Picture 1 (cartoon, one colour):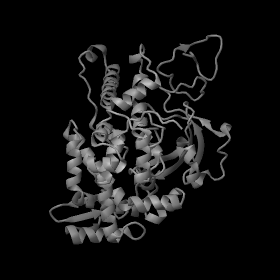
Picture 2 (cartoon, helix red, strand yellow):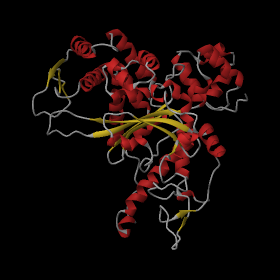
Picture 3 (cartoon, one colour):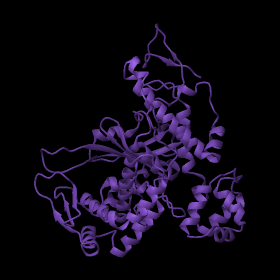
Picture 4 (tube, one colour):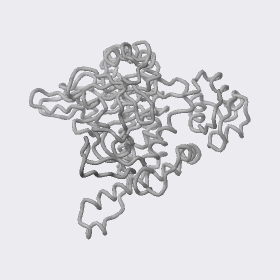
Length: 472
């Protein structure tokens, strides 16, 4: 099989750093010169077939792991940006986009950032009077969006934090068992923090008094939530230096973004502490990704399990490439990550044909769907509803739908695919990413027209939509 040119410098560098090798040591191990390795890591030269085979042999990794991931996410975001009518005179080919994503990722990121700012500015201008609009200032990326993109483009996997948490989990004997006792004991013995139950009327899930060294947990919160908050408190002590280093090198523009990212990394550490990488990956394979059994084995929530499955991207020890999202009842995607080819739209709502919306109609069940996107890629999609909070009848109980899935080539690793007709193409529902960029011309569920198609209005004929779409 012929292997095309691959510019995977970041992946090679991550693999080398994961093995704690210098460029000279790593280059010697795979049989190339240090200068060639340096050029590969800086995307100045592609990796050859011989280098790919050497990486697979020496580090027991799947060649497919090296050729997918970051490029797909960047390519998807870049394609969505260039589909905006702003670029109506320019329609780059897929090959052109791939060349930019592979050879000039910095330029691609800059273009995506500019497009985000352009859209926000346009939306602001459209919502106010023209006179006022002419004086509106340029709108920058929000701190939340800046942090979301940080995690998105590092594959939602932070090696230093993940391994730090895994080492501590092994020391504390965490994983399958009573995590609460071990976590609370570590806080008291190592950090002098006493854990107490909250009082009636205090709605805070977690409250820490740094002077009294007292951590108060809401007694009505579910057990997995309380354990997670203990782990998050440990993150603030145990991972502080590593988190500060990562945040400091990320180049965020505002202090808000810095603090949001710091909290995100603390949450990441907490999840990795409760669900240690290697033991969780092993259990996921043994249980064939049965999320209910995984939650029961590790004493975690379904959301914690689904989120953790999407972070199993350690070089040389990757899990199944999974997409994960959390959606509220209004259709807003409040969490998102994809290690698969399916990439969530950065603007607009999710496709109405996606089974995640049906989860609210059947609480307590895991819904399955075979789906195909316009590019011909087929997926196994899972969805289930969860309810947040506690505190009794009068308390607020937000409801969300969790979406989880993989490309159909990995479906055999999931218990949910056992009785499904994976070979029957007609069994797959046609879904898109977002109506605004979906090119399907005959979708009765379309909410808005695609950005780059002309509308044809026929006053003498009405179909499921009040317009037809041009073919080009």
